[in-house]
Length: 233
Ligand SMILES: [Zn+2]
Image (cartoon, rainbow, N blue to C red):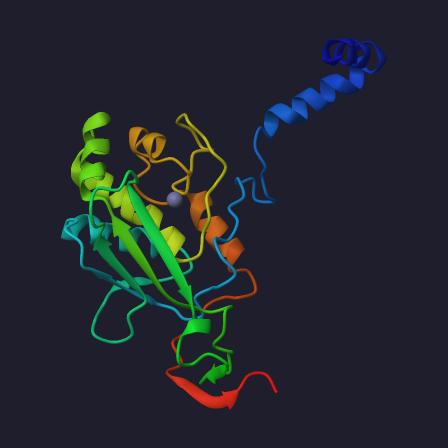
């Protein structure tokens, strides 16, 4: 049936089919208005303040950690090392020997003390607001990945931390790409091509998609603790 349909299509609309084939080859994966592969949000919750403070409790190197933070700071958020104030993202070593390279959990405000109240800027602290994110790194698996592709451990740690920071800011995955090129983003679902192709920092499309995810929700300065002004009455 498929062959018959194909033959018939070619006979009936030879000219139109050439045009469709050309369009298809220009856009092999879903692209948005900026020409970037789309990245959906990871959850329904978002950071509402900027900058975001990150603490490294893992055995990943200080330099890969610092580089991963500063690489995202060219985007819409400033990411800074934890300085004793509000802590947004925590990074730990994974316990045991899990099969994965790294993992990120994002927690919203609905399970915490301010739930149902406004912050001092008037935003409701509920399931739409990120409370914190926790990243776990499988240090041994990251070293294996570096070895597999003859990359340095430092560069591979930086790439993995930067990818997980994307998740922590509520980015999902970009469409799966397995070879090097402009369609391969830092937020690719599999780590192998990202490491093999030296995608160590966010690409312009990763920055772009973070901005798209936060469109209309542009983060503001931290407003302080919540008030007892209830959100829903
Ligand atoms: Zn991921």
